[in-house]
Picture 1: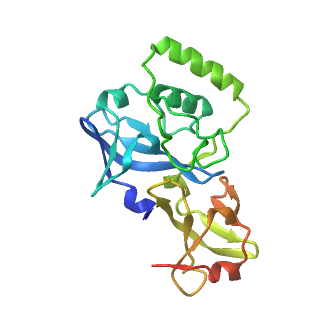
Picture 2: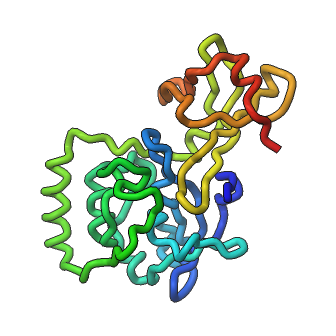
Length: 235
């Protein structure tokens, strides 16, 4: 089932032993177009600290009314690697995050989640915990090997509202993302074309994105204005 990003924002996140906080953002990968992390604000519990929760942590699909449920304890979340969400997330941090939770890297392998199309790999389990010094040393060594790689993580909060540029001119702005609650892939971008053309919202697939210009807040498409005009309408 597909959900709009703006519907997911604000949902509660519940651990196995209590509430963690609320979703304030999603980080997506602009290469394979998958949601990699829920950005969760912990409110008064951890002094308003933001934490990143991978969809690999979800219990089943993880949806229950207005809450997302994860197979983690509050203590696991509290002791997870700290993150400054005002800065770009580095691959170094992603390695440390994956090692802490015992998840395989999503960027190694041919599929959306590396070795598979879904967040959880059958039989995957968290490894026994190790000390902070061992984690830090291992993460640093792994990060050095991958120093040339970019994480390609982007913030939904930042990108919503970007101008959409077709091959032959402006055509609208990004209104929303659609997120599959099973794969956590992004099958469509929701484009608001009302300021440029008659009609409402339409959806375009992410593989029609040629590039995202972060300096000018513009998403460039491989499509023409006419192709966007003829794209499926979104209710």
